Length: 355
Ligand code: DOR
Ligand code: ZN
Image (cartoon, rainbow, N blue to C red; front, side, top):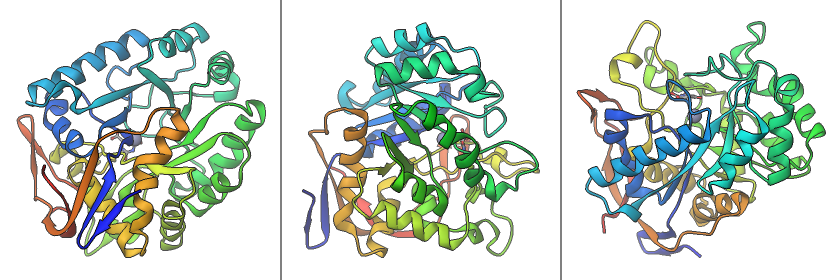
């Protein structure tokens, strides 16, 4: 049980169930931010080229572990939980072989064209990926879903709700025992679906979708650092997400979707999607939970529900938050470049205690 003693809150050490670390100099720049707060993270496979095979995932894992050491951290400071990038051609053997390694935990579905580096993604899930889905259902390997249709006739703000009808419901009818994580849920329709559906389903929620509605993208001008996919939605959706996150339901857990992009790629005529929150993730989540009056539910969301769904042990360490102002830096270095954290320059009321 989490303990709130006057102005500190100690939690079982949390995990991030949805994270972009990238590779090379970017990976090296961001790894310590995540390791400061989280023991483990599910690592997204949308590199260039994407992590489509078990072999590539194992090589990527080695590069992440090297980056942990090069950051001056002990080897056990952070455990990457690897994923495979699903394509139209992923075979059942690839899935079974990857899962058998014990370090590749899930498969990520990007509908082709849905977001950053999704061109190699799936064009027709039920038509093309039957063997892979069958194998995953059989061995209990979760499918992590970017749940948006890419049909240009569907309004950007409706893409998640339409995905539920067109893809999620038929998928789960055909593979009722398949474990599914609806990643970075953004709508009331999504919350209703995940709350009420039968079978093994859960969802991750980002800090930014709990704290902001779509007004944030347009506040006093166009604000590219609030642009992500799925895009922020109306206030009614934010409220539904916050209610789900703080409800104590085991179906909802923490996934930052922290997505580093160089400043110039965001502040651009065609800016990249993604919010950088790894630096201050638990400060942001604590702020959202406190505003909802539900700090007592933060530990289940951040530290218990995810391991339970993935069938992994709960962490043994702890993380302490204290009620001390934290001013989000304007920029942080990223290789030879820099990146802008979400809500840069603003102050939060919670800080992670450095032990
Ligand atoms: O905003 C996003 N950024 N959404 C995604 O789905 C991908 C991510 C990225 O990789 O930058
Ligand atoms: Zn993501």
